[in-house]
Image (cartoon, rainbow, N blue to C red; front, top):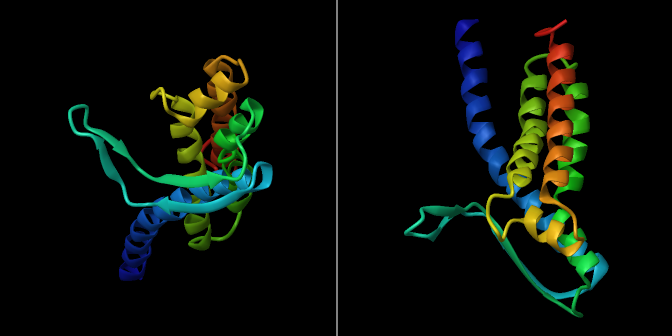
Length: 171
C-alpha cells in the first residue's frame, strides 16, 4: 500500500508541472479568444516555453501570445483583452472548493489543476512589470492597479478559506 501512495505523490508532482503548461495555454488562449471576439484577428500564435526576456534583469517571460487584429481595439477593448485570463482564473477559483470535496486521490489532481488558476490569478494580480496585463488594463480604463490587485486577493483568500474548510484543515 505504501508504494501506491508514493506513486500517487510522484504522479501528482509530474501532473503539477504539466498543469503549468496547461494553464499557460488557457491564459494565452483567453487573450486570443477575447481579441477574436472583440476585434477579429487574422493570425495568432502562442509560445508556452519560458524564456529569458532581459538578460541583465533576469526577467523571465513564462508564456506569450501574438495576434494580428483586423481593426485597432479601443482602450476598453484592449482592457478586456488584457483581463481575459481572469475569467478562467475565477472559474477555477470557484471550482476549487467543490473539487476538494471529491474522493481522494482524484481530488488531489483536480485541486492541483484548479489551484493552477489561483497561481495564475496571483501572479496576474501582482502586475509588477509595466507591460503586465494588469497594468495595461488598469491604464486603459483609468483604474488604479490596486483595485484589480485587491479584487484578485479577495478571490484568492475566499477560495483558499473555503477549500481549507472543506478539507478539514480549519473548522
